[in-house]
Amino acid sequence: QVQLVESGGGLVQAGGSLRLSCVASGNIFSINVMGWYRQAPGSQRELVATITSGFALTYGDSAKGRFTISRDNAKNTVYLQMNSLKPEDTAVYYCNWKNIYDTRQDYWGQGTQVTVSS
Image 1 (tube, rainbow, N blue to C red):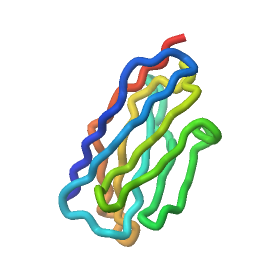
Image 2 (tube, rainbow, N blue to C red):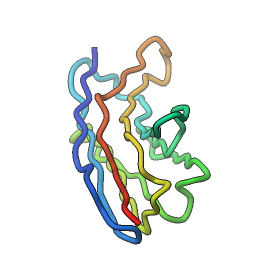
Image 3 (cartoon, rainbow, N blue to C red):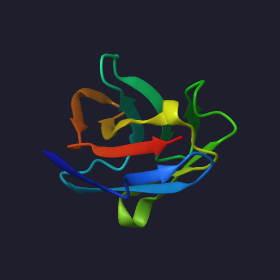
């Protein structure tokens, strides 16, 4: 089992910034991918960004150019720096951890609310 604890969400005005953090603990396999997904009311969960333990990056279309994902392997922590936030970025942001070699090991955090006011 892997436990994920997110922090850093909140209310921000359009154009502002937030930094999300997610700490993983438990039975962590070193070769993994961590990432962020988001879900707005009435919408499906969508990819924001992922980063592997080898620092390979993937960004969803909504994040390109405004969001930056990073990680600290020693701390089992992933970060999401969000700049130039827009009201359409309002959603619950979920942290995810996957074992690259065993897709059964796929865990989610409880989510953190990000609200961007216009």
